[in-house]
Image (cartoon, rainbow over all chains, first blue to last red; front, side, top):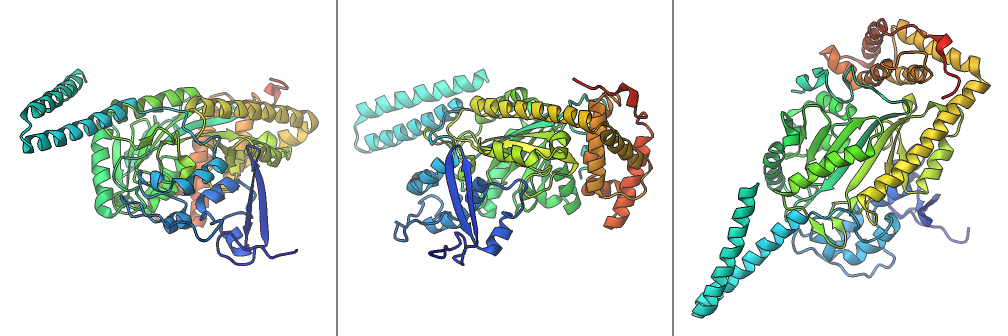
Length: 170
Length: 362
């Protein structure tokens, strides 16, 4: 062999080279003996490379990429590489450049085509709207812009009444 | 703690009167869901996990589908009790190692379980005996929609339902169908099948998922991909692959019967003989022999009702169930004796093999 490949997990010399085709895409992984054992690669039953890849760190193609930190949960790039998992729902935005290529290999597509939680989303957006309006109201009052304040107050009332109606309907 | 659950003779997977189908034992679908805000369980601290648990527990118990359900805090369960729940596919192995603030809701018929703070905040699961992808999806979809009315789920229009691991992103849906494939195993075709379906993004595992072997010729077949296709597309694709596997399995069985009739009848006859008379039996052997009894039912040599009994024996022959039934801590050797005693007793109610009723074709 021209060059010794390194294990994708621990950097030792790789002796196990795997190739699997999923959805016409080729996945390749190089592993050392002990990591291969540990990941169950030697077990012919139920072994899947996609599984392995989902549970092993995503190997950096270049060592100098940006170190990002999620402002919500504190997860860092290095955590994602180590665990292959995200820390909270905001992480997907923060680590998108890292996650996206992984998704391309892993799934049938990279955009959600399934169910949408319409009720939860509309509730969340009306909550956000309410919060925005309340902030606007507070600053209007502070600036003594009473006409504007009255308008915000009416809008808040309308949303709250709609919510009460919805609750009563349940 | 789980006493009533184990003794419930109407539980979906172990009830006596249930009609069981050939080839497909059961269908399970799970959905991964997370809350907006708190970190995912692995990253959350105890306070955050407890908070998610209390927030969700109330909402889940209020759902009509959870009527008369029971909540178990993982910290309150013994190792053995957890093992029994794993053997019934009601909780995952990962949940067993869950830290403080981890729990599961299980409904009355044991068709629905919701794990809280496993890998994701919520893992909803519905299961039914037989090949029932569409009807199980309807149940779980309705449950999920109901839950969404009170819980703010993490969702992005681009990536769908957000999950701790990108492997579950999008629909968060994993459908697993448990299949009995003695024909494909005996004819040496199983490896080819595994390779072929893996190229279609479908995974084949043993009875207890990852890393478990395929004793009893039972395999769990599930979708690997969760993003880029709608739930219906995923289920349809999986369903089509499963139908092909069923067809191949039946062909393999009849081919085996045609080519090695005496050998097959001998295997079935011996399995019956051993199970009826055994005094010491390990779970692997029990499962492999029970596989031939299930096959005998499919071939018409035993009444249809026996199939559900066999499926129950498969679960009750698991180490945790045998130990639990013994009501004391027993060593593996004693377990093999207890298992044999149980099977011998159960087999007094199984009719004799009707070799003359063997159906030579479908």
